[in-house]
Amino acid sequence: MKTIKVGVVGIGAIAHIFHLPNYKNHPQVELAAVADIDFGRAQQAAEQWGAVAYESAEAMFREAGLDAVSICTFNKSHAELAIAALETGLDVLVEKPMTATAEEAARLVETAERTGRILMVGMSSRYRHDVRALKGIAESGELGDIYFAKARIIRRRGVPKGWFTSKELSGGGPMMDIGVHALDAAWWLMGMPDPDNVLGKLFHRIAPYETKVNGFYEAASVDNKTEEIYDVEDFGTAYITFANGAALTVEASWAANGAQDDAMKIELYGTKGGASLDPLFLFKESNLVPVESSLKVESNDYYKEEIDHFIQCVIHREQPVSDARQGLTIMRILDAIRVSSETNGAAKAASVE
Image (tube, rainbow, N blue to C red; front, side, top):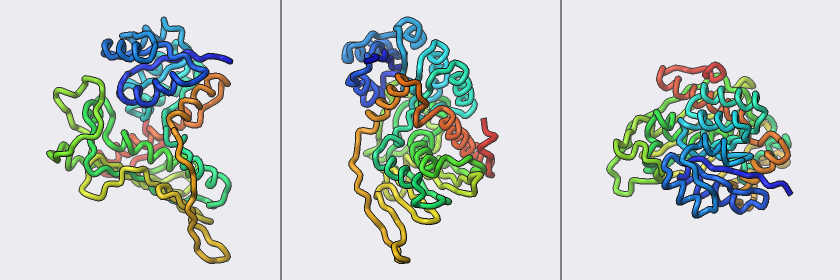
């Protein structure tokens, strides 16, 4: 059985909770190396997980004898680190969002295709059993043509701390951080149509706030901790049309004066039926009578399935479910939302790069 030597760059919460344990417990993986700009943090992780610590990601790429790497750093650094890994001959799993801009994503795709390496984007929602159940139903044709969808993740008071609120480091606020999950999952369920026009609006009206219970999660990196820069939105919304005539609305919030709705919600409207995620329901007609059915799908450790899928793609040289070109399309939509908000008009997603 082939063993894949893996390294992890960026030893923050996402690495400790999802990447490191799932690599460590995988029967075909040797968790060989970790790297972080905070070398002390890398050393602690190396001791905990039985790996070698590196202060420089580039040194780790060159010296650790790796086959693959996870990039778990702040968004702005994704492109530079992933390109360096690909150029060194490594396969790459890059956390969401793929990059901070569509232009960076395009460079990343070009590098992956030129080097022939695997580049997978960590769109973890695609590996959820309930989302996959809806994907199977949609692909079966049971819903007919999906012409409209809604997607949302709303936090009432859930602004993260650290680099997340710095536009320079993150590329954007909740639309980039959590909205990308809803956007990607809905678009995937719709059959990934080509995006056309985007009308978006990003609001910065509430945060930072003085609410007593006012934190959510905190970046491990020291960047942006002292100055606490907050120059991103706290609420974002968009109306996206596609070349096939379909449309999608997306809403994402870290702070909003409305009901908390932290779970990802998706609604699909098709010509033969519809469906929803959380709650998981199917809406159809039976003998000309409207009926709705609750779907029973067991929950799963979808981050584990994501890591398992990445390793199998590396071993068998297969393109991942969440591949680089799809990640680029999502980044073009996210950039178009920003451009639309800044210009107060519609933006073309296909031309944003």
